[in-house]
Amino acid sequence: MKKKNKKQGGSSGQNRKTSEDFMEKNVKKPEIIVTESGLQYEIIKEGDGAVPDPDGYVKVHQRAMLVGGKILDDTYKNNEPMEFRLKETIDGYQEGLLMMKTGSRYKFYIPPELAWGKRGSGGRIGPNAVVIFDVSLLECW
Image (cartoon, rainbow, N blue to C red):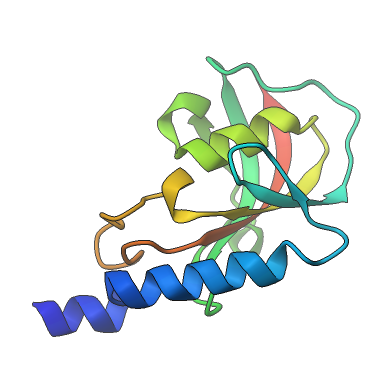
């Protein structure tokens, strides 16, 4: 069981070091903006529509990946946007979406403490992993 987990998501210590190194290097890029919580993001395209409500729902296209490039989800590829209640997602994703206007496309670099933290998520996302989301906000209500 332990070997399987390491293959799929990496060890906690290894991921923590990889995550810290990645975030330290990423923040030095001129296009990266950092929030008070530690969320890093870049604006790919700024929209001019409505801003999501913290208690509301959103419809997005997203590509979620890990630092090593492993794709976790890609609705762009399938051309099937997803809809969800903002409160049902991780803290870093919520924070990022609340900054966006409909029609925007942002890239979020979510540190472990704003994502799945020490526990990870099943075998797909290891403990202490940075998760990167390329998100287009299509609708909010």
